[in-house]
Length: 211
Ligand SMILES: [Ca+2]
Ligand SMILES: [Ca+2]
Ligand SMILES: [Ca+2]
Image 1 (tube, rainbow, N blue to C red):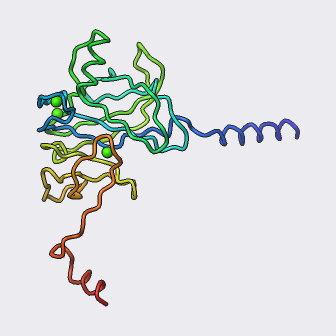
Image 2 (image 1 turned 90 degrees about the vertical axis):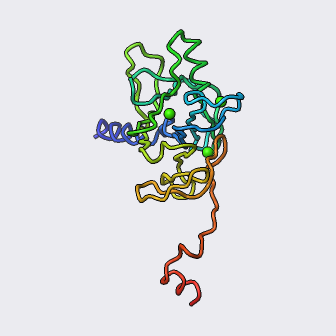
Image 3 (image 1 turned 60 degrees about the horizontal axis):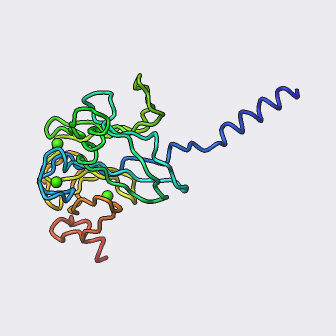
């Protein structure tokens, strides 16, 4: 009976331990830059790509042992570093990736996010591994219509759903995620407040509004 009690206590304690790696998440991705996003004075299809991460938890996280890559190989494109406070975001430019790859003595490919056909962005966790056996914390698909000039895909902070920040290059198609009319927000919260155009409101919506 005592053994059973200790076993149940152990199970309870194990399930109560918060998952410290669950706080960091991919927040926004821009795969097809047409402007100088990293502000180095040049527009570069590799250097100006960017991926933003966010700390969704309630404690500051040391980003060591977190890695990002696309779907071209299992090799990480960059190992992250620094501290990220609760609610804070951090943007990683392709030029940051290339500088890191340079320091590692690797090919300077940047993220290499596909502009057509789509691509995955992976957030990985674990100590440096020759075998590349990192834990995949998250993988985000960036579709063909998302990877167009200066459109980013981001996590809406209110709903948690992915939306298309198409303010610089409006998307009129019907493939999810749909555009929200806001410009990309590198290094800032994905907050977007766009008034709903009257012409886009349905008759039912108008009736409800003026009832
Ligand atoms: Ca640039
Ligand atoms: Ca690209
Ligand atoms: Ca953002």
